Length: 366
Image (cartoon, rainbow, N blue to C red; front, side):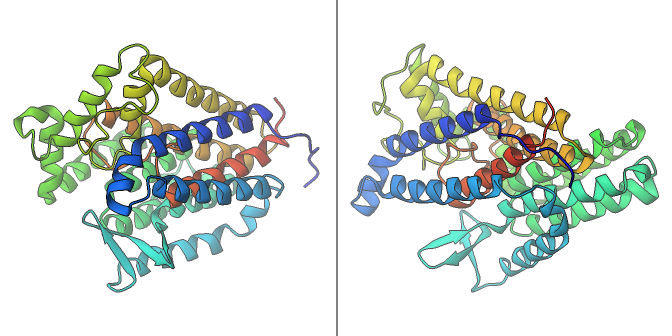
């Protein structure tokens, strides 16, 4: 491609590594008590997170130096591989069950979550598809329907695990990409109504999802059951006050808030670092979103623009859902907080995505 190459967005690198560093500190702080009790090693989760952070950072810098249009050539192959992994994870003996979901494949002492990688694969594929067929996107039959068919095929397989949270992030990201590609508002209104009915159907079909909704509306109606996590999360955030109890001084991590190093790590952060600490983290995410939007607007071609929009939308949706859950604004969904929550697949995926975005920034005119 005849595009002029420049230096990557160093502000984006700083923001990413800054959030990663905060995440590593908070994973240790949140998990030390539980890790010492269960594994007799207070650094158990921190060491594993550090390992994946190292792998992810290396991957990020390697991908940052790979021309982003290379991914367009491999988009179909990547999608097929991810679809195969999603199917494999459903096979007993291959897929691992955790918390009622068959979402992981064991690889030695570690495990990978194919649905996490499907999110990035879908962004790469959809960016190619939309950039090549943008003139058809206003047509429901030729543009929108085939696009949504691909998206909801992946969503359907993910729901067989089931993993509503990851599926919701993927669909939300794709909807934003389709919307900015020029799809008609009238089509979205109609599909939105169908989507709401479908979501209600998914909730009604699984009793545990109904409990999550009711516990979100009134967690104290079942304080020892479905409302337990939300209540304990609020008990963590409340005492944090303006400046927090101090790093490492959380009370809720003493077996009150279940597995605080994962989806509810922001609650522990708010408890220890207070409103100021939580606001700093949210500010870093806001700045990261700003840099991503600038990169998307300045990308030299449609593919690069769609790629950047997809990546930054994925991060933004996950942050909004996670913070909403932790603060009791929306039902529990099981979504990690990017760069902060414990989880190898999620962390590696996010850092790889940042590598792609950083390469787009090397050609972006902003």
